[in-house]
Image (cartoon, rainbow, N blue to C red; front, side):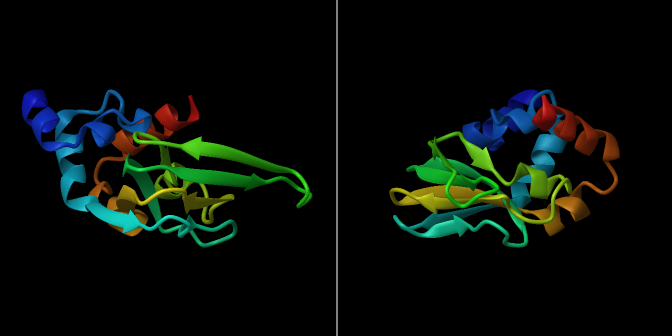
Length: 138
């Protein structure tokens, strides 16, 4: 089963930390949820304060994540590359909106996992979702 899951699930998804040590059956459940999208350079993928709807995993290109601190003068920018992800807190139901803005710095391909579909697909596997939360928090 693991060999089949490894073959079917894109490496950047399979190697994402929130999916670490999940059963192959859970990884296969992710497949129909993965939607490949493209963001053009300069396009916002998420905006601070926006109601969250998905998690994203970069599979091509790069992006910048900007965290605005309590005062608008303090800004922290993080470069995101292939394999990096954001929106896990929304996917896992830990937050309802994004605390940052992510902007594609180049043409960027991302796998998007919609939170509402994830909740439906994993409703009968609370222990798997709990494992994902532990992985995210560690």
